[in-house]
Length: 101
Image (cartoon, rainbow, N blue to C red; front, side):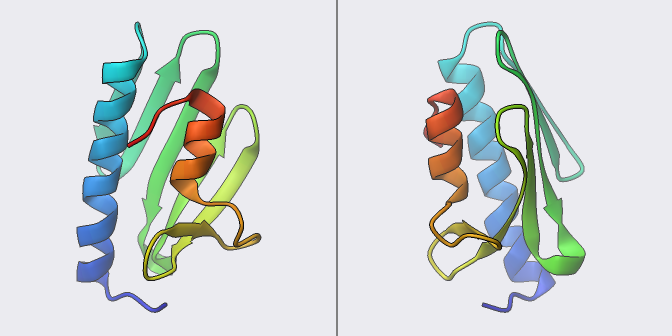
């Protein structure tokens, strides 16, 4: 699904904020730093995740210490992997760090 820049921002910005809040609320000693569309999560015993908006492609990119790099596009309902539509951003985060945003 093609998104214009405004629609992309209206979907991606609140999502990054929700993820940051959920991680900080659920995981003791975690750090969530959101700046300029880049969310860095530092999780004790797990490592560092980087989740960022990639505006030129209208995607959200994830770097995970557990599963590596992923790109997610908006399906009209959720953020799904551009390589494997069975992988969904929030589902992946839930599986890897146990947090629901």
